[in-house]
Length: 339
Length: 242
Image (cartoon, rainbow over the protein chains, first blue to last red):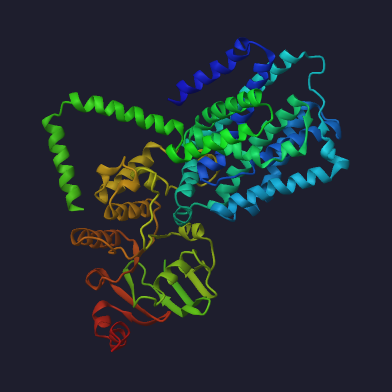
C-alpha cells in the first residue's frame, strides 16, 4: 500500500508543473508542497510520540532566517546555507527539546506556543541582525531565472524533500526505534518501565523533525525571497500544520500529505476568493471542529474503516464456513469463556 | 541477583509512605509483599523501579546501586514490573505490545525492522505460553481485563528480566484465571526467575510464595516463610487491628 500510494505521489509531483495552467497555480502548488513537508515533518513528533507541538512554525521560521542570514551576512552559497541552517536548527532543537519535552500533554502545547511568541519578539526587536519588522530580503539562488521556471524548480525541490521526509518516516515507522516511540504515544510510563529511554527517544525524534522543518523553512526563504517575523513566527502556521496532520491522520504515512493538500488548497482558494479577509480562518476553524468531532483519527483511517465495513458486509452474505473453521471458532469461544 | 533496600524513605507532603524500609528479597524465589492498604507497598514498588525518587535510603540489585535511577535503567538492569491498574498499549495489537518490549542496543540495531522473524516468533511464544495467542492480532483496548493482565505480563517477560515485580496480579481476576496465574508464576519461577508480588489475596500469597515480607506503616514488621508469617502475632495485629 505505501509503495503504490508513494508512486502515485511521485508521478503527481512530476507531472503537476506541466499540467498547471499558469504560474499562479504552480506557485500555489509550491505552497501546498511546503505545507506537505511541514506536516510530514511535524508528524515525526506528533504522530509517533503523540506530543502536539504548535511551535513547529517557529522552527520553520528559524530555518528560513538562518538560511537568509547565512547568505546575506556570511556570504554562503544559497544551498550550502540551506543545509548548514538545517544543521544549526537541529542543534538548536536539542536545548529546546530538552526543556519542552519534560512536560506532557497540555503543558507541552503551551510551551510550544511560547516558543513561537518569544521568537517573534526576538526577531522583531533584534533589527540590526534580522531586519526587524522591515523584513529580510533573501537573494534568489538563480538570479537570471524567469518566474515560471523558478516556481517549477522549487516545486521539484520541495517534491524531493517531501519524498525524503516520507521515506525517513516510513523507515522509523517500521523500526524498533519507531516501536518505542509509538509506545510513548500509548503510555509513556509503561514504555519507560519496559526499558525504553523515553526522553532520549523523544529528543532524537524532535531533532529529526526540526531538521526537516528547518529545511522546508529554508527552501521557502530561497523561493519567496522575503521574510517577515509576523509571518515566520506565527502561531497560525503551527495550527495549520496540526490541522493538516490531524485531518489526514497522524498514524498514517500519507495522512499529513493528504491533509496538507486538502487544507493547503482550501487556504489558497479562500485567499483568492476572499482576499485577506478573516473568512478563511473561520472556514478553517470549522473544518478543524468537524474533523475532531466526526473523524478523530483523520480522513484516511475513517475512509479505510468505512471501506472495510462495506467489504465485510459483502463477504458475510456469501461467506462459506468449513467444518474446520467452525471447530476452530468453537475452540476459541471456549477458551475465551475460560479466561 | 539480590534485590535489597536499606533505610528507604518517602514522604508525600505530611504522609510518610515509606519510613526507613530495610528489605531483602530472596533471589530465585517467589517473594510476597503484603500489608494493609496504605502501608507503602506500591510506593515501595515505585521507588524500587525508579518511577518515584526516594527521599533517603539505598536500593541495590545484584550489588549494583539503583537508587534514584530512571525506570528504563532499572528495567535494563533486569527488573521488570506490572502495574496495579494493569497497563498495556491500548492501540497496539497484542503482538505489538509484546514486541514493544524489545530494547534496541544501539542506533543501527534501533533502525532495524521491529517485525523481524525471530522476535515475532518469540513474541508469539509468550502469547501462546500465556494462552492469549488467538488474540495476537487484536488491539489491546478490545481485550478483557484478564486478557490485558496476561498481555502485560507477556510484555514484561519478553524483556527477559531476572526479577519480576507483580503489583496485585489477582486484582479483578476470576477464580479460573487466578489459578492459572498462580501456576504460571510457579512455573516461571522454576525456570529461574525471581518474583516479588504485592497481593491482597491471601490464598494466592500463601499458596505460591516462599518468602513473605509484611509491611505496616511504611516499613517491614515481619519476614519469613508462609507458615511462620501466618502464626506471627504482629502480622495479625497489623491486619486485623487486634
